[in-house]
Image (cartoon, rainbow, N blue to C red; front, side):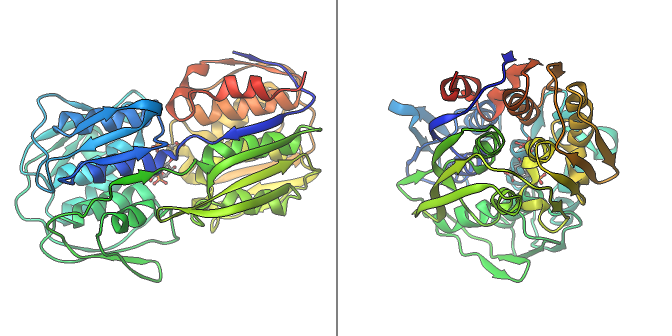
Length: 428
Ligand SMILES: O=C(O)C1=C[C@@H](OP(=O)(O)O)[C@@H](O)[C@H](O)C1
Ligand SMILES: C=C(OP(=O)(O)O)C(=O)O
């Protein structure tokens, strides 16, 4: 995929559905006994992995006009033993959340994923689930998938202090907690995205929050809504926010962007860098706040991105690195060691691939140091089969002298139309 430099981006982008919320909508609707309609669902490979897993557990998922889904479950105890190995593909969210949900079922199941997913840490979910009485085993002393999930007997609620801020670990525990015989208290070191908690409330499940703790009482059933409208994904909007900021003569209107405060670190950091961002038309999409966002080119300054904000922009670091290369002064990222266990080691990958374009970025144990502005040249760069890398490289190329992206197809994981939208917004 070749992306050439452009003199400006202009237009309106309808932001595709939130990936995190799309996964959760299918899982919760699959526990209901009435049909749930889901609009603006993200039709991307990761969310389809969740659909395929839930279908294998005998949940009906039908696709109607405009990609609207209708999910029909068989009730709270209605999942059935799958005949096949469940494949989470490239999706960490699918395998980790599903492990919580499968661990409490009275049947055996096996989950696996692609080569990248089979290298990602799974002990972080297996350890707390084991304390609940859930029996999951994996490869290499239960560190990696494939995972074998044994039929559950008695599930206890636990009090768990999470060692890392991870919405996936938190959500796996909270899903299992619904089926336990006593309450569960999960405490996070820093608040991670709370879409599971909000989705629980949408399904009539009470959620108690005390500081950084979440308390869940077991339930016997869920009260499903008739419809869920998935907000647009701010992690997808992030590529346009950065691209329009650093490419002169740009103005974009991003429509229907989720602005859940556990996700808006990118808006805070770009604003601190001097970006010209206007959040308008704030409204609710169910229990999730959404808005339209106008972004115009601006002169950016370097910024410090510390551990406390990382969970609120965890997936945005690759594209923020590109922003930092175009900003005046130093940008320092710390506390971002979780990036090493994503689809690829994203700290290493940004240094290596943007380095091919001439960028000098220092890699530290838990972050990056970028001195801007830097001049980038045309180069061939590899996505490392990581969707966020592919899109960050495209933004860098469009803002500079162009880029050739090897292995660009991975954008199908979260944003299948990314390249065609980029082409449509270009001014020359
Ligand atoms: O819960 C979720 O939907 C997600 C949580 C984050 O992962 P971690 O929980 O591993 O931080 C994030 O990086 C991922 O893209 C989606
Ligand atoms: C890390 C990501 O997703 P997941 O963990 O679900 O694979 C991502 O989308 O950037």
